[in-house]
Amino acid sequence: MSAPILYIVVPCYNEEEVLPVTSGMFRDKLRQLTEAGKIAEESRVLFVNDGSRDRTWEIITELSRQDEHFQGLAQSRNRGHQNAVLCGLMEAMNRCDITISIDCDGQDDMNAMDEMVDAYLGGCDIVYGVRSSRETDTFMKRATAQGFYKLLNAMGAEVVYNHADYRLMSARALREFAKFKEVNLYLRGLVPLVGFKSTCVYYERHERLAGESHYPLAKMLGLAFNGITSLSVKPIRLITGFGLIISVLSLIGILWALIAHFTGTAVAGWASTACIVCFIGGMQALFLGVIGEYIGKIYLEVKARPRYIVSDRTEGMQEEADSPAPADRV
Ligand code: UDP
Ligand code: MG
Image (cartoon, rainbow, N blue to C red; front, side):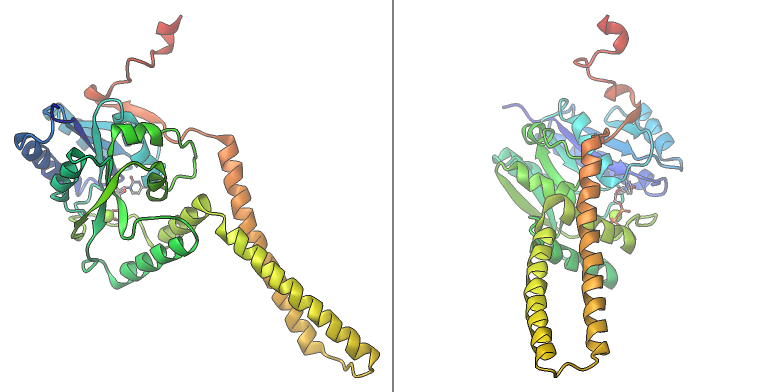
């Protein structure tokens, strides 16, 4: 078997500060893997510009002009990290044998790629990069992230603990993954559903080399909620359970009230009535909100809008031949 072609897929959003530093590191890694005979010379670093407002795309095009091992795709606007990764993976799928997705800020240890490729050569189609410790994260980030995985698993979404989006996927796994058409993307919850032989590789997570995180607490909570509601219907089941319990309690309450009424012991119980009304009212609003969230998801899925739109490509990433331009089709 000849050495596989690897595409390192790197989403970038306003990363002009960090890109000049990490691009060289990605290139070195590619060179080192090629020299070790593990990957083919045609391997590439594929940057996906996620509608950055700074000079990120200029940097990417400049890099690709200097060295064909750098390639880039530009999304037509900012679509978020998950869609940017998907865009890169889908575009890389038919040009390579393996992809590794990784953030461009240097937080994830690139040396774990050696082990990932080894695992692929050993027969795995998916290799998850898992953080062995979170010492460099702030306390807040660590606590929220940890709570996040626990919540996800408790809610029935199967995710690999402490794994973000640093992972190797073979082209074969990606072609199957491409059949998952949902627009509410939560990659780390979806990839395990593809199946195939998989394994984990452990690495230390560093601090960002430059620039700032784009995942503040509110966005993290949003991602967690999206993860749960796009992967599991457990919250709705819980609501049904709650509803059942409240119904039984209400029945007991009604009986109690009737007995009190007919035995003449009923007193003007304003406080208890007010409490019950408030409680039930609050619960109902909350439950409707959760159900509404699912309806919102259905709404978005039904519309089936494109999950990514490429506006610009570097030389080596031109449209694939199997999708001819409209002018050629006539
Ligand atoms: N990113 C992106 N689109 C966005 C936000 C982030 O493509 O809308 C990219 C970003 O450039 C980085 C990766 O996603 O490569 C992870 O973002 P970040 O490092 O800010 O998140 P954190 O590591 O702090 O969770
Ligand atoms: Mg980061």
